Image (tube, rainbow over all chains, first blue to last red; front, side, top):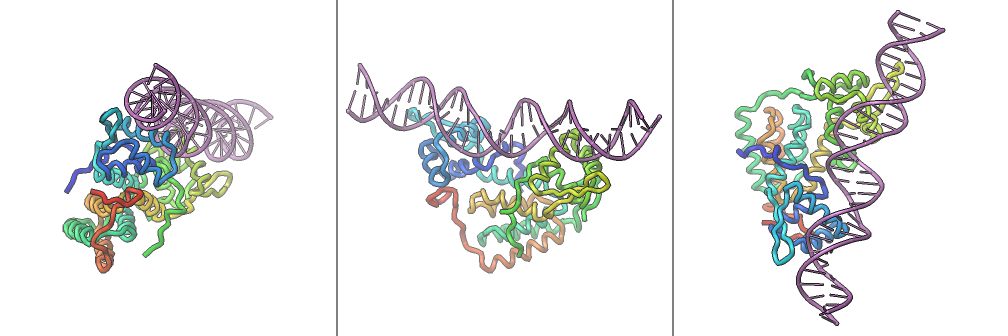
Length: 147
Length: 147
DNA sequence: TTCCTCCGTTTACATTTGTAACTCTAATAG
DNA sequence: CTATTAGAGTTACAAATGTAAACGGAGGAA
């Protein structure tokens, strides 16, 4: 299916995620509106939010556009790319042998729509055709077996 | 199925994960062995590793036990708990509406065993019985709709 | 025209993380 | 008994992160 994108994804800190989510949802947004929306969720000072925005711009995750002497922010990567990138990053440092169990836990805890479930089932059915019987642990340098 | 554990999970940094994985795999390990194994993967100095170990102990993720004037380290939480906790933590800051898509991407990219796939299929089949048709975006305070 | 306000920029500062040298003490080699 | 060494503890220091005050310019209120 899609390519792995994680390599290019800048590290996004938790606070930055909160802002990015608003930007993604609004598409193109003035700092003022962004600050107001953000403050409705977290009691951060204007300064704090502005700092975060500048850092996001520096990281290349947001870009600005001057519009009648104010700025409008837009994301440079899609929310999906960012989400997939972060998720893959996380999974990269999990024991290969146990990724399946973690995924199982997630699937169990996350609220999924009927459609999501169907999509997952389709991918799984496809993968089942060539899935291995076991995956080795990769936690030790010499590839010793886990558990 | 299992309870959500994330609340109690201390933040584990990437470097710390690497050490924890070794500890989990070995179960109970002398710092010396740990350092050697770690250095076979990353060229960190002994000092660096010892610092990380102390931080992990301070965070309560590892505990020590004196054994003939050396220390043995053991994890205080299971690898599974830690993995689930981190994964849930990550998913917590994703747009509710798009968690399904992210999961799909993961399932697609991660190497799963036949057994993992079966387990996932079972959970999905179960969830399908009561899954909603749609999940709302929760990126904005006022719950405006995404996309 | 002058002052206030809105917005962007600079500076600040504590905490966490990555990375490591130095020190102290007990065991060990001579 | 003394010099070396292995482990543990202490100190260090830069970069990233969370959080924010202060500053400066431009447009609008008076």
